[in-house]
Each structure stands twice: as C-alpha cells, then as structure tokens.
Image (cartoon, rainbow, N blue to C red):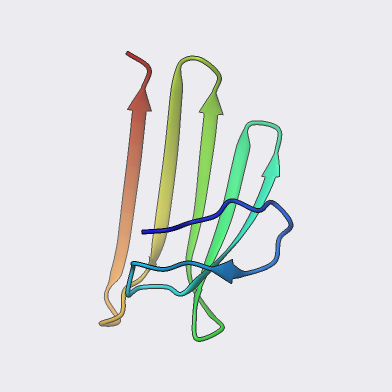
Length: 79
C-alpha cells in the first residue's frame, strides 16, 4: 500500500487497499488526523497519536467495500 502523508487537508491518491482510493491528512502537534474516501465519499476516519521516542497509536473506523463496519487499533512501541 502506498500512502503519502501530505498534511494539507486535501485528498491525495492512496493505492493498494480496496476500501479507499484517497486520503486527506492533517496534523496538529503529535496528532495525525485522516479522512479516507472511496469515489469521493467518506468511508473512514482515523486518528494517530505520536509519543516521540516511545509509542505510536492509530485508530481507524469505517465501512469496507462490502458495506461492513470496522474498527481497528494499531499500537507500536519503540524497542
């Protein structure tokens, strides 16, 4: 999957996931907000929080290509 983080709030192409085709990112401090689109309709909202040198947590909620809701949480710890 290719995702470019351009923090301008505008949708940019995202490839490799059938659930969405573009993503709009904004960033305020250590918080990253994302809105993902499929055919120009919002299908996912997500938020990531970075604790520099320690953790990165990312939460996603959306509707997949089959119309099913999903909720995912990723947590990464520095080793």
